Every structure is written in C-alpha cells, then in structure tokens.
Length: 67
Length: 145
Image (cartoon, rainbow over the protein chains, first blue to last red):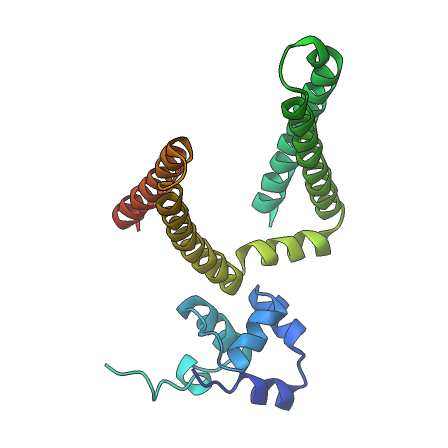
C-alpha cells in the first residue's frame, strides 16, 4: 500500500528510528511500510496518523482497496 | 512498561532456574553416568545438549539482566517483542515451516518404506504427530481468534 510516510518524515526532518520508537515498532517496519513491502495494521496506521496529527486516509492510499 | 518489567524479571528467574537445573544434570551425568550402563555416545550427546541449553540460558540471562538495568534497553526489547511485522514474519515462517516439515517427513517416510520398516514406522509416527499438532492448533485458533 502506498503511503506518504517518507514524504512527511522528510518535510518534518524525522528519522525512521525516531518515528519507529514513537509508534512502538522497529525501524525495519517503517522501512517496509515506506517501500510498500508491508501493510501496517489498523492500530499502527492510527498511531502513525496520530504522530503526524493527520487522518489515516491522508497518509495511506486506499485507492487500490476493492470493496 | 512496568508490566513488561515484571515479565522480564520473571523470565530472568526462570532462565536462572533452568540454567541451574541443566548444570546440576550435567554434573550428575558426568559424576555418576560413567557406570550407568548407558552407551557413552548417548551420555556424551546428552551432556553436549545440556551444555548448549545452558549456553542459551546464559545468553537470555544476560539479555534480560541488561534490559532490567537500562530503560532504553527495556523499551528496545519491548518493541522487538511486540513489533507487528516481526510477529507476522514469525507466524508466516512457523506456518510454512510446519508445512515444509510435513512434506519432507512424508517424502522421507515413502522412501524409507522401501528400505527399512523401523525407520518407516518412526517417520510415519513423526509425520502423524506433526500433522496432528498443526490440525489441533488450527482448531484451537479457529475457536479462540
């Protein structure tokens, strides 16, 4: 799933490790989400959204999800 | 984090107890095992296996003691253990690992069937056991999750 995490981190000058520690995951998990190898759970997506003070759908691209 | 600290303390105690039990068994085996009548290979293997388990326990003891001394290490350990991607990898590797083991055991069992009935029956038992464990876990998780 595409996300704006890398873009937001760069804008706010936050390292992957800083974000990872803040949301309680390893740095590798953040890397995997950024390169679309891993899809974050709802709870992690919520934590990331809260960290950036944004809504989940503003960070994660759900356009590929079929309903 | 305070709850996790208690969990780590508990694990440290369990590791120390395991280590002491293994150490005691190795000492007993080395002291009295020579005249027990068991094959020396079995005794040597048992002592080597025990030493390996003891070394693993020492590793865990150092890991848990280190985490209890430093808040940063404790948090890093907590993140390492609760990281969702690592848990996903572990679940996937475990599931695939059991399937691959069952397939390999079944193949070995079929080959052994043509050469040695004892090996065949042993592998049959092992294949059935692993398959039943997998089925049991599937039923359990289907009911609890």
